[in-house]
Image 1 (cartoon, rainbow, N blue to C red):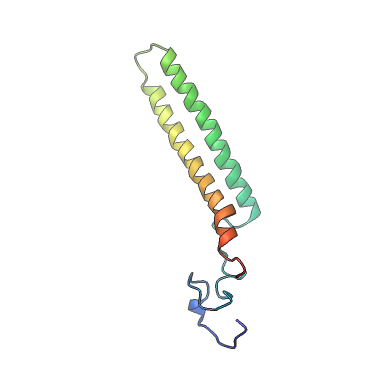
Image 2 (tube, rainbow, N blue to C red):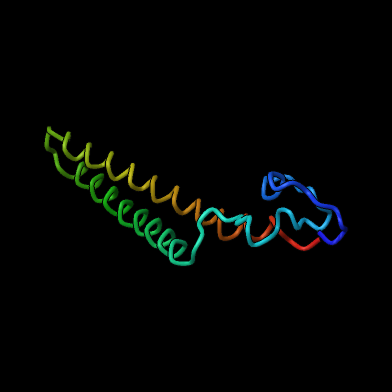
Amino acid sequence: GTSGFYISLVQKCDGKVDCLDHSDECNEECGKEIISGMILKVLAWAIGGSAMLLNAGSLVRRVLDMITTKNVTHINRTLTMLINLGDFLTGLYLLLISVQDSFLIRSSYCKKR
């Protein structure tokens, strides 16, 4: 900071505010983002959204097929539905990480006081 006092290097970017002006935590070197880089942010949003959308559609289609088809062996469709559900949840998780990074952490961590 500008007070003339210094902190050790291990105290910088450790998540604990040691300077009154927050300069030990809110600076270019600390990188308080989950996903760094604009390309990765865009890819996270795109992949998460498309995974949720496409797998939700596939799940709905599989459920409708199971309801309308009176086939006794539904094991293949059930296994496919489980894979779709897993991929859907992975897409949801990726979107939640993107929301956390884009809106919650960036907007609140290093606000000027």
